[in-house]
Length: 451
Image (cartoon, rainbow, N blue to C red):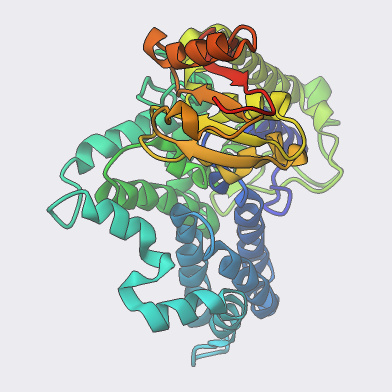
């Protein structure tokens, strides 16, 4: 934001919003939706540098190409940044410049070479497997679920995406918001919407490009996806926050100019000698010089600070409501986390663990990101979708029954109770998860002797 010549007050307010935005901090969307946000921000920075220093556009294009190549391996919606950067540097290469008639394709070629350097495995996979390449997996998956080539609920999806991004109530789900509340605080959503509209009519080409990218990404997602899950719009949060910073900076300059006019006492010292605060230059306010004492611009920085505090407070209060909402807790407990945790707590080193998961209908294996819960015990996992015959259970095994997002039924606990009674191994151990549901039960078989 500072590279875009935005003031410190507006930059700080936007950064505070980013650092506390509930969507970015605790949203239980997949890691792949959040892990590449820094790459998105770095590409936007490269675009800004190429706009400010056109004589060095080729260097920034090469860096942006290397970063864009990394996004080719990431979640599908991140690829919109690759398209944005490619179109941007193509425009930089083809636009007319003073004293130069033929186009200079060096920036665009530098971007392509950089992108190819890091994304070469993706292009090789596409060359060998064509439509079956992993690059197209999301399109194949969503396309296989419908008969028509594009989603029939496009308008409905666009509406839901807009509601999720701009602070209206939406079907964001309990992973992003308390039940019945918007995915982002209404105040932050209003800033997102106002910033997008303002950027669309900005004199800065980069801001206009960011606004167009936000709109086109939402439309493309609505056309190709079979649902309106807002998590896939996570890459747009970086673009929206940059545009919010620009909007707040514009507002602070207008406020500073008004303060200088209405309060002569402060106006005489609110800017460096020879520079008029808010001076109109080519129809826009002159950029603030680095080091300008913004605190002398009157109440504007304090207003921005109060705005940041309000947004932080709203997010914190919403998180507290989420922590006490049974629907949210149940959503966080709907996977096999509780089962994996229970195995890690009770299993002995190298022990065989028989895992019965009625909700899967097949042998159970935990997700890779849950293995750490019991990896130190190095157990041998044997998974079943239904309770196996008692005589097939190995001696000394830990027998665990786990379900997803609900409590165990009596019929699912009864086989364990019968085994515990027959083998005299004590009572069945029950685990109550954070949603106050008894989702896991277990017994440990004796080390020797037939059943």
